[in-house]
Image (cartoon, rainbow, N blue to C red; front, side, top):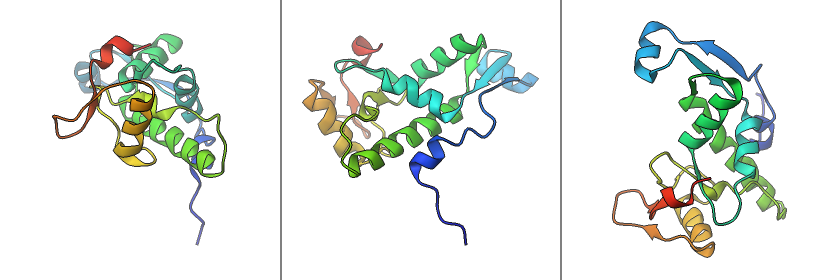
Length: 154
């Protein structure tokens, strides 16, 4: 039986990515574009690494940056989200090993400003980190989100 890959191994497994794909008619209608970039995990991680203290990024912003880089209409929503989770998992492994300078995954929010329960430590860890950096967390909804997150986007 094969052993389970670590988050770091998943992060470094590009699976022949990135690649630009032409969307079929249904996909083009749904996503309102004709071309889409499917990024490599390390590309999503690299974008997340650049988010400075006091700033935030969402999956939508990551997707727009990737689309601009590859001159496509959109960045893949599915893989961008999965790869942010993998980047967060790899950073969590590094933190558990005592490393201090890791990808600040807690600054990456879901597209609507919500915290991500799949990130290491769950919503509690992400919330604590963001509060420590001065952000206010709105807990009035089912899933907490950063209050006025749009003001802090890079």
